[in-house]
Image (cartoon, rainbow, N blue to C red; front, side):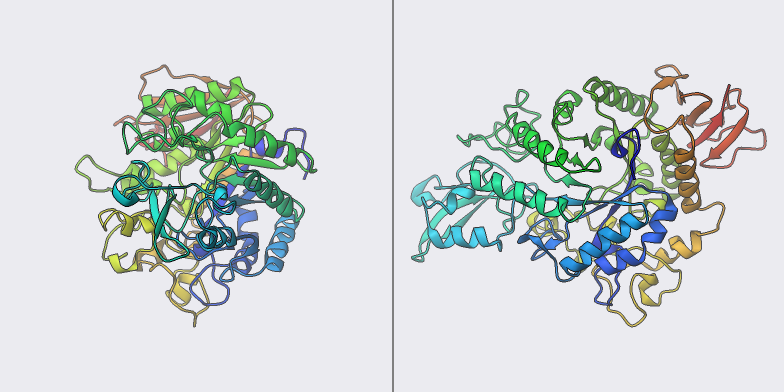
Length: 544
């Protein structure tokens, strides 16, 4: 599993939302055994590694992003032995394993937080978290005006050991996710030990959740704009809890730990930052290896926006020696066919969005750097958004309750995968006699099932397999330069990669002739009768 170029610089990494991938025991929740049983599918898809959303012991307030024990596996998913079996089996299939790491906050059921509540104000146990007295009469108002990402204030007041009202604690997400204080040496030491615990068991890296948010301004100032959660209203590095410069010292320490291990262990940052210049700081030499490219993910299906995201990202990251990392979907955003199909009036043309998502798949896999594929993206799954398919009472995302039931949250992209067209076993997600999945699957999911798309030459699964196989075989793809053939402002994006390869994406409203070429390698949508590239389609070409 060793190459001249570190594997992570141009890897294709598949994101596994474990609760929704495959249920082996029929309890309605995906698990490690179900994932292990499906490793052959992922190997044949053509991916290089698996990013697995949190598998740690958790009360599941935020589907695992509230960790109670970083050295234990959530019982609904299996055991530590099951995780070790998965790691070994994945390596046998040539797949690397990248678990999620959640360092910004713990679960309110973590032993540390229980100790902090029992110890009371001013105690060493509370110093590991961000506890503060309240403002106003009797301390009844939150210490700052900060807001939670899930809605409502970012502070919750606790009861003191003697039964009275006491301090407030910070939680930038749910009250069940208290933020830790990264200035405390116990916090730093604990997470360094957690890294070693899992590196010793063979994991190949970590995805770092909320990488921008670990360090808070010790003075805890109010925000001029209470809704600014990512630093847009402040000078670079000056926001009280987002993208502060001090976080880089943490990652320099972590990089040193990763470099002690063989096999090119890596980190990928989830860093929501105001600019590409700030993102480049996270992947500068001696820090994290890669970072998600959210500017590209959020760009509309418009040629100028896409080209700008590509140019700006590659320019700033290459300037610090880091590869770009391209992503179209993940567990926090609307799936691409629904996102790209949204009309100005708010309705969604899923057929249009699906064509654009297929073209975007060829675009991203042709770009220099690494690529992430979210589970179900290879099937072309749209968002489950209709309340008839995903009723209010079934919603599990804490955003729903924290927003006063005004925002439905992210459950629509987390619905369990359809493996078979038959409804038995809930489209193959679990055993035939198993419980219903933790989120309901709509009836139309069967049309996107793996066994329906497998072998269908027109399916998105077939296109994805072909693209990843070509990408692995062509020297021009992966790491390397990109040279534009189209001009800025053109409605057709066209670029070359290495010797003999070109990618063309038609974002105009009319079919366009292909440039001179020797062979058409792949198209996202069939060419028209004249051999022209139809609107909202992409082509890979062999060129001189």
